[in-house]
Length: 428
Image 1: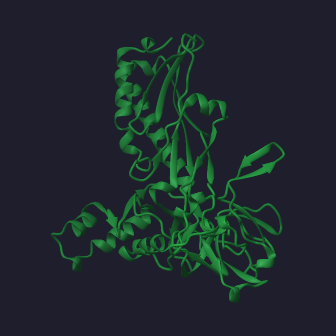
Image 2: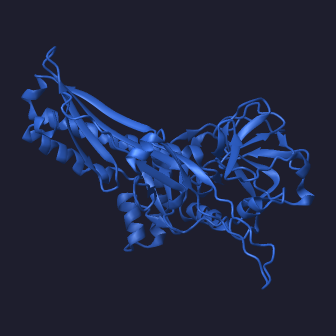
Image 3: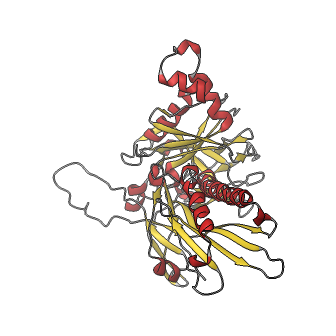
């Protein structure tokens, strides 16, 4: 069975179903995410996970004589997986078939659900893995909030291309309210758009997206007396490495994470953001300190004294070439402490409003290969962004109904968590 087993009306309905799908994929936009086309055979042979190279951060030196500076640059890579399989199954029975509009409503409902789930997969990734943090003590108010994001991204050297922030409906509409105020003069595009359509658009070089759903993060419950040893002798810093020797030979290393020993993990939860006293962020290219504390994200809590965090603390305290190449923070000698205080940033339960730059996020489209003549009717299409949508059906003699399913396969991968963050409002 194949496409010939679909009626003409089913083929037309499928085309209609797909027509509006790309418009609904507001987060799957090539302005904001990179699409990685892959060899399906090689990917299948690799277990649907491949290692993707991260951009190099190079070093520079002054002076004509560069003796001793010609060293191999450390290449880092990230595992990217094809791990998200989304299916919308439904059944059409003989009674439903009497009403052609019923079939069309089912098709459109399936399309909306699949598009929503794809958006949600992207939203969950940027909400779960972003490490940058902008804390706002008041409600969303407009330009100043977005400008704070822009300032943070500029300070650490995040590229200008494809910057966007996905805001909860409440935060987005609060910003629109600020832009629509009468004292901003009517007759201009910004004020009118904000008033008539609650439209914010681009602010401070960052595109804004309104979400109908946002991930909420509970307030951090870690105690106020938690500390970490930042002295060089404690070796609580990370040395980047491309590969390491393990039990199965030489393997790639995921340098997005580090296991950190702290005084206690009581009350600490995955997803919490925190800073460490004396650990300041640096510009990724110039390595100059921003003068502001570096934010870190809790990925998991494996024990009573250890956290898996992102990004790792690459402070160059070990003095290796790889550390100096990928340094992301600094710990001055005067700031080294056996009991550097940990301060949590997400202090009030509220929505995560993620922001990122295009190169931080990569979507890997996949495709199913359903065997022909296996008793299943099938047809598929590939959207302009590379995502395959597979439509299949199979009849049942038991109830004379027909089972349909709408499938897609893809992976969303946070390639660079230090180019992803969140702004949270009404934090104490």
